[in-house]
Image (cartoon, rainbow, N blue to C red; front, side):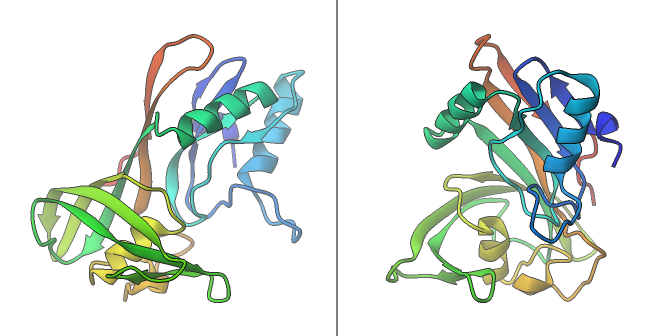
Length: 215
């Protein structure tokens, strides 16, 4: 990947990338291509600072906005912001079918199943399952598909994918959660924008993907 063409914002402390679908965020022991490795190579080439801090993650088949820290102190500050819900994260998704209403809130309980590498959704409280909530708005409907804008209230493993799949409105291409469409190395779910206050400058930043999902 030509990382420079995917940079949305950069200063001495922060790097925001428009991650392509199919690229995993972190290195693994199998040597698969990763955003972490691409950023490390970029920093080694152009900067003295080689630190790469993974602030948060988005799933491998998901594209869009992801933020990395270039210093350990910035990593800690950004993660604290995220934990205190000081970020506004907006996603877009194209799903099969029509939603029950033009706007809505989805709330149920999610259990991560490490054996199946997926999330299990329950409508009622369940041992070890965590309450999971999101809000959605329908932006457009066409040809049996809906374009949604989604705000996470909680941030659980595969949350958007699992909750929409549980509603029989799976993300297009997401066969793990019920889609009957197969796409190569991607699903139609996107980290559309991130809004946060820069911990050092105090500036309010809203950063959006260059290629928003459209029907």
